[in-house]
Image (cartoon, rainbow, N blue to C red; front, side, top):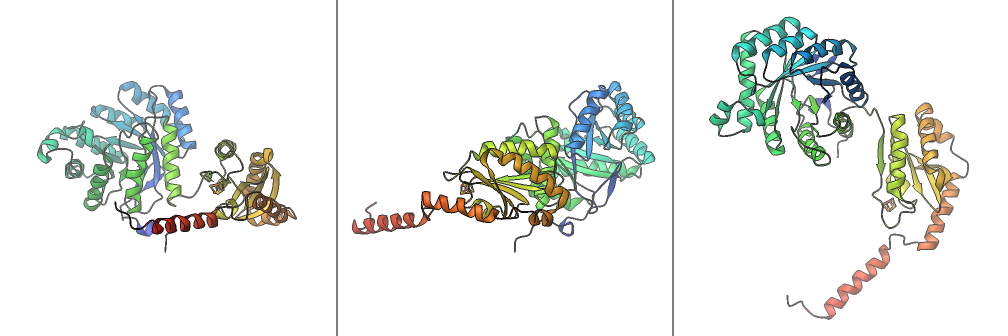
Length: 418
Ligand code: SF4
């Protein structure tokens, strides 16, 4: 039997850490992360982006801390942020110490770029004293040169060894409040690396395909890597790395988790038929209009836009609400049951009004408020279409007839010589 979602019970068991108020691992809901693209020293610009990311589904936001002005910016950003802030640290250990001083809820260290054991241990000891977790953020593109040489390249074993070595430094100062990432821009390498990391560590894993590029290819790469691992039960927090407005990363992360049934639906899920020659409307246009109007309302429902009344309501019967195009009219339906027939030019506005009522009153109440005679009106449109196009709207029987004739003609012509 098909499973509706990956349940917590099927997820690989990891220990739990907390990034500020957000638990990660140990069965906690998988969290969504993104990263600001502003200069961290630009406090207002960075905060505006953090708020936009939080509104789009990010549970945690990372900001670069690459210079003193950035660290000072973090001191002003952290207390005003709606979500926990992680400082991203590459080459300068003093930036990690400054970020901790600024009050960040987490650090990300790149072991390939920050290599001196004394400095790594100094940061870990400070994080330990302040109760701040660290992500060991290994990246295939910036793997420690010695590991690259030892393993003959950026292999899964080399990436995992990099994380293990960093963890060993941390353990020397009694620090283990850690999550791990082993990212690569190659999806197969990323998947293999995380599988190995999952077998090697019980720390929570932060998933991502790094430098995935602009959408749509970047989205596809990110989804291929992240979703493949999530369905195996691997991964505790995720980030899409897109060459795009980071809001797209947060939205994608949230939507992926909702699509996999790993997070409750918070926003709209619009489904639409791909359209075909039978469509009675411009499905793409109506779907885009509906998406724009409904997205603004951010209602937690699934809405369907279907191009024809013959197959539409049936095919989308699982949707909370939907509209299908008939003879210049739209059939509004809830869970596949027609509740109202509206003129074609009112399809989108009727859909939006019903979506609001549905969220406010619930499915049962809205089904009870269905127009008397809506089903009968809808049936008239269906029959009119049958009259116009014939009962065999899929042309199935005439196609079967054609297939029979073709095969009979071929048999009559004798065996093929090719
Ligand atoms: S719902 Fe109608 S228009 Fe849309 S793809 Fe199916 S048959 Fe075609």
